[in-house]
Amino acid sequence: MQLLGARSDPALPPRDLALGASEPGQFPVGLIPTAEYSSATTRCDGGDVFLMLTDGIVEVAYSRDEEFGLERVERLVVENSARPLAELAEILIVATWAQSRHMDDQTILLVRPIG
Image (cartoon, rainbow, N blue to C red; front, side):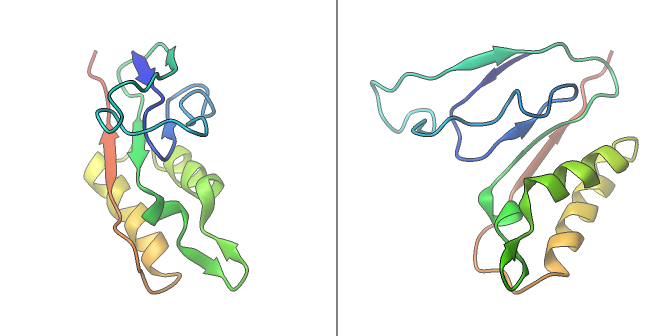
């Protein structure tokens, strides 16, 4: 699978969670016609889980001085990766909603390759 670094938030590939992290200055695909993007290739197997999300998930206030953060998202994904994807998405949303009022959109895309 090839991951394109053209988003504002990281993707979590199955083996190397840092592999899909965005680099500063990369724009969403199509926004800047002349923009160049970095990419990385990773192996994926049946049962792996890929996650892409918006900043409305990771930037939710966890405490007065702390965001929910990518580390907490990673932990929840790893701990619950065998669950059905709809259930995993619900776990992530419930975990962030339990922390504070939301002022931003929250979008999660989970993919589990078959094979």
